[in-house]
Structure formats: structure tokens, C-alpha cells
Length: 124
Image (cartoon, rainbow, N blue to C red; front, side, top):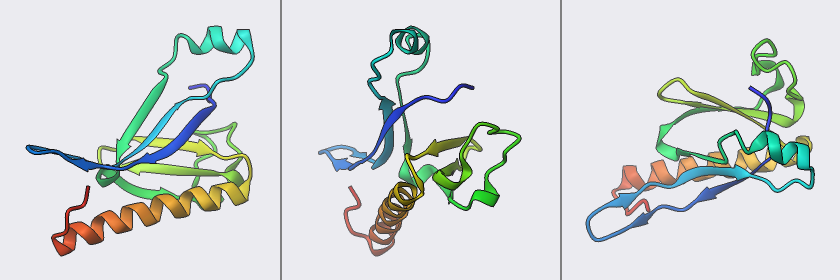
């Protein structure tokens, strides 16, 4: 599948009266000033998400990214998110330092969520 330029963020969960909405890793198609790109991307999904509790692993070592599956990836600035259902999502950042920051934020968010759940706190 072709790469896409996306905006990436972690959306906080929330607790409503009758349900809890889990925190998620979210992404949406970034705006790019290129009409050919816009035409191509109009046929692609514009957003996506993964619930943080569904993330099985976050791999940020270049040697762990399968270059046969992701031949165009810049492995030094990319990280891979693996889910419990077997899906894999590759995210490539602008550079290696941005990758380190984003991976750290994601891992800290997951660790905080698990810690709150283990202690019985409201995790949303």
C-alpha cells in the first residue's frame, strides 16, 4: 500500500455515565498542496485509530522493521505498531529525533493506562 502523509496524536479516553471510551492512537490525512496527491488520496481512507489497549508492541529499532514488507520506509525514522489482532501500522516521522519523541509519548501513554487499570483508578 502506498504511504500517506498523516497527522498523528493520542486521543484521551473519557468516562460517560454508562460507558468508558478508551484512549486511542489516532491519525488523519494531512493537508498537502498538491492536486494530484489530493486526487489519489480521495480514494484512500482519511483517518484511522487503534485503541491503546489493543497495541501489542511498539517497535522502533530499524533492524526490526521488515524491509521486504515496507521497502520504501526510512527505517531510522520509522516505528511499527503491532496490534493484538495481528495488524501492523508503520509510521515514518520527519527524522529520527521526532520518532524518538513520538515513540516515547506513545509508550508512556500505554504504561500510564495499564498502571491506572492495574491500580483500579479511572483510566479514561
